[in-house]
Image (cartoon, rainbow, N blue to C red; front, top):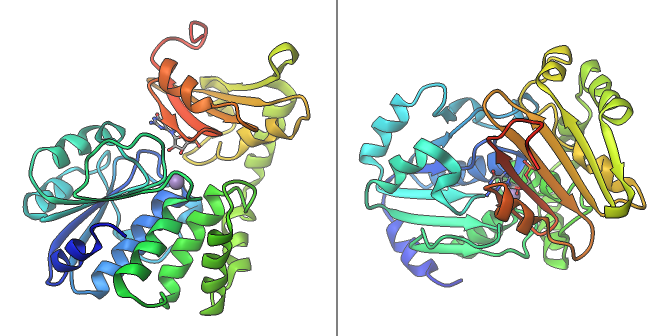
Length: 318
Ligand code: 5GP
Ligand code: MN
């Protein structure tokens, strides 16, 4: 692993370390941040995990999640910590503009920067960069990083639970981006005693009634299929957000239902949020939604799963 010797020497004595991940953090962003944080704390470092915006309630059970600082809610502790942070760890994103004002804070000062990510087209913002777009998740890469750094099997069960959470959510429960290496990683997590079934239950089988009603509404009333373009669209307007009391994370996974249709190769999920129109794209096969998200919607992601936004009105969004 190129540069790991340098990382080892930087981390050889205690440092102040700021870990950040992207806006609207998902299971992989949260899992990789908490895994890294715990691993670094065990090695004697002072660590803060900071996200631009809040995380979904379904991840509330994760170890040390209550210590995460949210920039939108209270920037001050993060600003204070950043003044003394000597190392910055960037996880599950690869361009500082994905974390808004928090990015300005990180960009302002020279710090040793570790970037671990699996999205396309990384900016060169790390002294140490582990960027592998073929990896299922940033969590898979954090696991690889820890084992190479330590030269040993990772045996901490809390870290294992964090790693597994990111793998499970980013692969859509092992539907996408799987590989022999990924299954070997998961096998090693089970070998050290990780209970994988209970993690699946905590993440996927804890919905409230309103979540299934929202899904029903999306499929029955808000779904359009454009056969000629093999495209399915679901949209939600501001009114829907009120009626279904949609909170952070409540729309997660809905876009994937469109791909269940045989004739749909591209799925688009449009949400009218208070200041922007947020759009998720998914595709099957070789067709790249990343290009569409990047070219037209200020976004990016992966070939088959990307996101972006528009500042136009819902009606004017192309
Ligand atoms: P989702 O549609 O689930 O929000 O995101 C799908 C993928 O696209 C994720 O890998 C996410 O990081 C990426 N993504 C979502 N929104 C944006 C965005 O506004 N900009 C960029 N660069 N990537 C995004
Ligand atoms: Mn990810």
